[in-house]
Image (cartoon, rainbow, N blue to C red):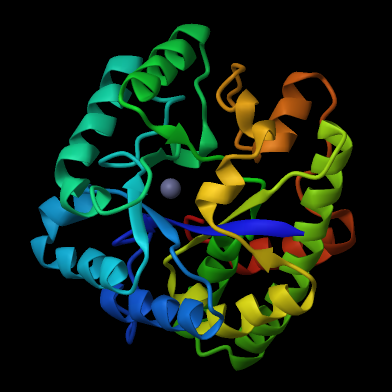
Length: 290
Ligand SMILES: [Zn+2]
């Protein structure tokens, strides 16, 4: 298994406040350290620029990320979903992010863009117009073949922190790597079946407190399970990604699952052997937005 690791939503995860003891700085520093100790270099962070307008001091998070040898890419200004807005608004968001993120993006070897929630457009007009804009601006679309659902674990984790549930925290920390490795293998197996050959994977994590805590051991566990980390430039050059943003779909699905769903051949999103584990985490994250 060969895959690139990518990070979404730097410098500040937009969906929940950080619990006591965690800041945008501390989370990013922990991730930089974990990547460094696992010799994972040149990771692209798909950034949202809204946080730089609201909290200008967070530009130092991007400074530190780039100083550590990693890269910044475009993930829109304020993270709107293409299902919810018109093509014009989404295009403005792409351009606004480029304006704000320019100082860091210009240092990256390549211009990458990731759709928010990997949504390519719920009408053909939106899909075509946004894709044409990305092509005209020389962006390469970055897909996702595996997400690790660490945002789900994170919501459950912050719930456990709030009520000092140490057993819950232990369960979350112990279950995450095993789940992720199983999900990674499941996604690779299905992609190989779907495309009729191995794909170079693109994996995704977020800058959330739970992930900052487990990232060092997590990356080591993935490598021990047989994952070779490659650069995003290498992974994205895999011709299997030629179907990115090629079809209309409202569903939040990874690359191969989306293509299969549109073709009328859906598969379970979660690796079936770990569905019960996943359900327990979802239950533990109840009451908070995931
Ligand atoms: Zn995102």
